[in-house]
Image (cartoon, rainbow, N blue to C red; front, side, top):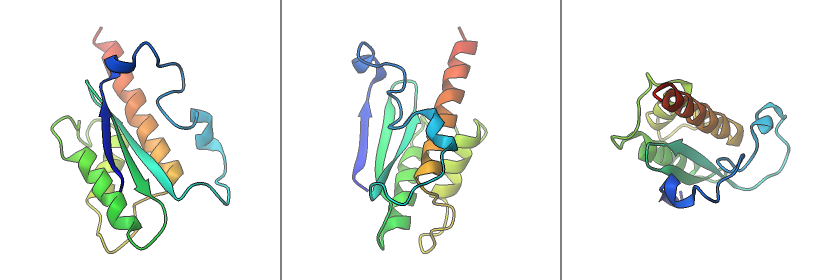
Length: 131
């Protein structure tokens, strides 16, 4: 795992545009996985003050432990809304709590993109409901 980069949304608000949150558009969720791509992926999580990004390896012997460590770094801080928030948080919680010796439940890039988008959209909807 390369680490966590946190940026306050307000720091970039003037430069953010539609589609900037993810490295792929939401339409990528319905595409069939291809046979290539980079050896890494990104976990994403939105809090009230930060976009949390964790770059993870998608290949190699330390793949599962690195992915679980990234999910834990998102799950453990108090800003994590918990599994009751929605499916994105549930997936992150389950991934973080899985066995280090197994890759079961660690997913692939498509799962990480789906979980990040689900939790982000849920967060945005809840923010709009509070307005």
